[in-house]
Image 1 (cartoon, rainbow, N blue to C red):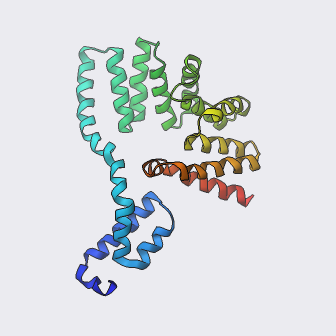
Image 2: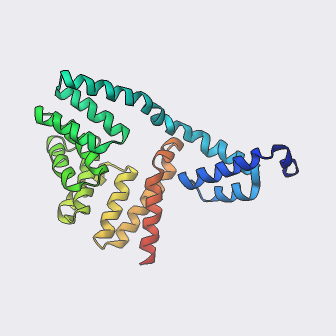
Image 3: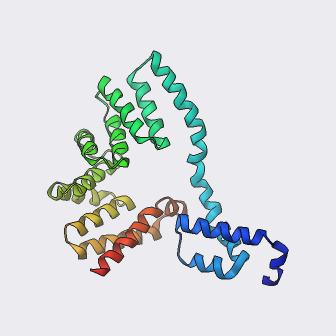
Amino acid sequence: MFGLGHLFYPWGIFAQAFAIIHFFRRRPEGYWFYVILFLGWPGAAVYILAEVVPDLGLLRNTFQGFGRRSRIQKVETDILDNPSPANYEELGELYKDQGQYAKGCEAFTHAISARADSIYTFYSRAQCSLALHDLAAAIPDLERVVAGDRKFDYYRAAGLLADAYARTGQMDRAEPWFAEVTQISTTPETLYNYASFLKTANRPHEAREWAQKLLAKKRTLPRYMQRRERPWFRKGKTLLKELAAK
């Protein structure tokens, strides 16, 4: 098989280079690096089939972005004639999905100024604030959300509030929320955030236990969810290494 490599030159080299670039960007299981490096183009081909092709489903949001930009322009124009809360809420969601978080916050603020009865709008603004690392702005919005519905978004709002408290040094306020959320939610995000809280609280044994729960969670998820949640598993591995070094 390897003697036929000249028949695929230079495409085999391109495939191998592409596979290595994808590997370093997506960080799948480490053994794939050796498969690509030492098996040449056949290894790269196997990697592309096993890891790259399934990842194409994650690009759906990228392609949707083209239509989203045109929709943003349409809603921005509509707001000139009709600055309703509903239009501002839609614009905020579009900005958030597009990764324009500062503009998203601004749009949600306009919506809330006109109508402050929707906890969904406060939650969306909080998500934009968190993406901007503005914890001081996110916390009041998340408090408003959980005051209205502590189970909102399957306890994710409460989990984000607990994490925001912890990251701003309010450990005594974070702990009861984490205690409640972790009884219900076992998402990789929640498991990682709680393990990080425990590490910060100088409870390394508990932190290690919850980080291990996070990595064990990977084995129970479908493949497509393993790919989507990969950043949390990667953070979990890093956290375990940090705990082991202490």
